[in-house]
Image (cartoon, rainbow, N blue to C red; front, side, top):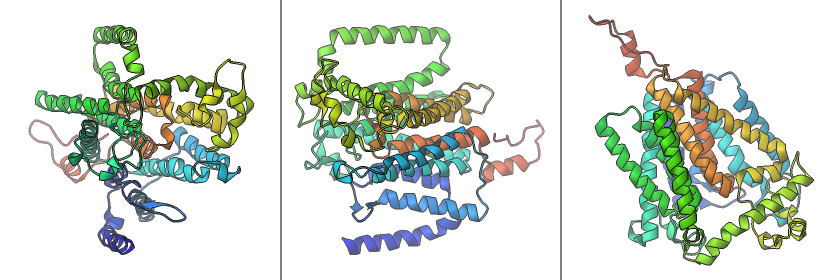
Length: 468
């Protein structure tokens, strides 16, 4: 295996050397998203002081490529904005809050968690932030996300139906990793992460749907149905909400007001009817092969208990929190509180099930505030681009993609600690960097567009259109 890995690495180096000088950062970023999802550490990893996998090697190459192109003068640093400052303070602050404590009492080294789930996504954001994006880069990114979503949906359905011959990679079916087995957990081995990326693909479909011709809309609609089925196959309620939300938010922007009102009313009525009539079935249906229906219902009952423990921990250290990744070192005493009349000891072995409570407990109001500023600012950028009718269609599609992804992220973040699921933060912040780059700088011209721009006007007075 070591010899095979060495030969593979040498072959990769030979092919990647030409890319160092002329490589396209946008294409490498798209490749990182695809590789990290399908061929991450569960597929192939080399253990050592730091676990090395294909996606992490590709991440290192992406950072090196950006550094070389900046040194060659091909990249220009943009003026620092609010998101940049917040993420810089955020990454330094969480590193400081990850230090200290007794390492033997943690499930995962807090500094290692910071490295892979905070530092890596923010560096991907930084690269995307300075990458000059072309319209063709956006087309490839959107359709790569859609293709990834179709693959994940097909795989999820095959997992649930037991069609194991069609499941790839095979580590998805590894019975030794028993958690979530039997659901559409995908190559990330987590149905919430799998469902979120399917939701990202749905946001890309919705963005491409707007402005397309009738035949192309029919194709995107068919793809949307596939993604809806794949999202359902995760058997995760928050994923259902997220995938539906990615479509609904785009419809909210581009539908007439009367359609929005009727749609909102119908959604409320349908949700109420389902809650009253199907409450027991939704609360307690069997999902994992190793999880009974009673256990599935229990997972919902435990969330208020976790929130209560988080609230008590927050009250003790509201500003700075108890330390990033150090929840299991600090939470023990809070399970004996009897003021609420709740059996808090039942969640002693469980960790956070909410992104916002996780940041609040681990890093206090400072950490949560920084994270929320980033999310709200990205949402504002996306909303402005999506609703500004004077902008070119491609820039509006970037805005639609942004708000669709955030609409998918929010319900999942309310019921899962999405920050520790592989690739989720890289998708969120990597595409966030694309959003900021396009919002501030627009698109750059590729060679074909540059030729059209320089071409003389014809008899009608047309010429190449500006990219902005």
